[in-house]
Image 1 (cartoon, rainbow, N blue to C red):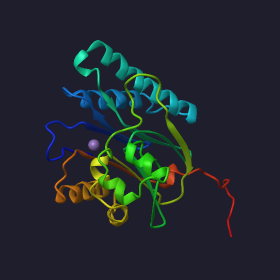
Image 2 (image 1 turned 30 degrees about the horizontal axis):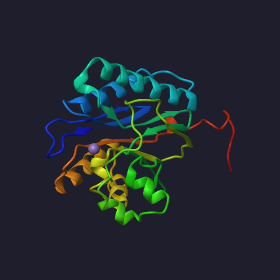
Image 3 (image 1 turned 90 degrees about the horizontal axis):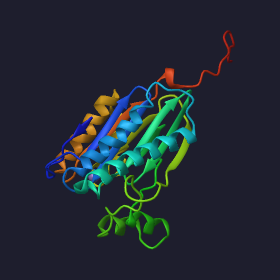
Image 4 (image 1 turned 180 degrees about the vertical axis):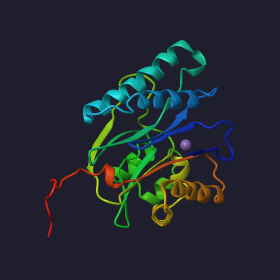
Length: 242
Ligand code: MN
């Protein structure tokens, strides 16, 4: 689900929620370029729907494809020459989640009541936290907290973070743009997702919390609950566990 924030005239966020696929993108660039970049990135992701045999290599290819599409459109349209986007994607296949990530949108895993952030923010402030220059608290007020160090679009090839996670029963996956994480503390996010009965309810609750806080940015959330069908089938037919 995707909601418009209170201040920006257009929604520069976009998302995909499919049975095996969650993705969010937060675009940037003037003249609606952000919206275009986010949609171009997700169009590359969509082409993967229904395909099998995923691995880190395929995840990288999808990100490169998304990046090329944005570059090509930028080159054709001078008003979109500055556009770019974040992209965070999780594909679920055979008991595993394959994660691809560029930018400052986030993926979280909620397991057994505890929330784990699966992605690093690629922003100036977050890099300063990781190298010990800033504390988390200082980073929240840093003037460059929204300046990205990595994004799709622009010159060069993207440096994509790729990870693979073995899923467990009742895992809950949350992808969101910075519009949400600048407003909600991780414990509030965890509480919202834990108390929901369905992924839709979780996403609705998160967006509702953000709008209570008078969201200044677009807020986009994609939630998936891991079901029996997503887990690897380990037991052999007829095998019994004692
Ligand atoms: Mn944003």
